Image (cartoon, rainbow, N blue to C red; front, side, top):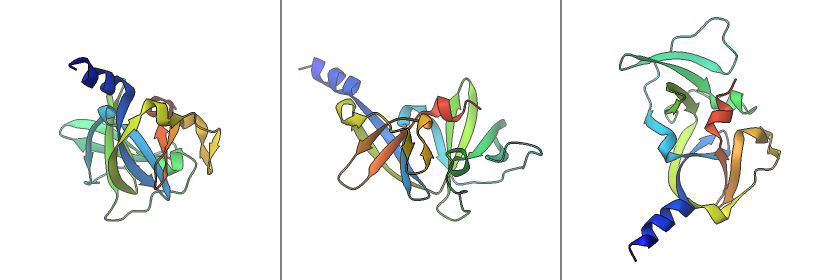
Length: 149
């Protein structure tokens, strides 16, 4: 029986889910450094349109991206529900500004399907796959692909 928990861990992933407009997305929870709601962002001249700016996170400079714009959806609207998901990519911290945070969901590998090339107007290349739940379809973001450009 001691082998079962390890086997279960290999076949499932914990996803932190969040909304970008009406789209429900998920990120592997192990990719997330922290989630915060403090937005004292300094704009960066001549940055791509999806770059909101930079913020100082305990002495580290973090670039903040508008996930809605990056995915080809509408811009994230400023509000009380907004959150900044801080992820680590190639030894750098990047903030992903989202409309709101949802639940942590366990994604069994056998329930994850390949991402269609276009998910409701969202560029499919940014997704590792999709998972259907009883309530919604979760697009599982490929963080490295989102942060490439």
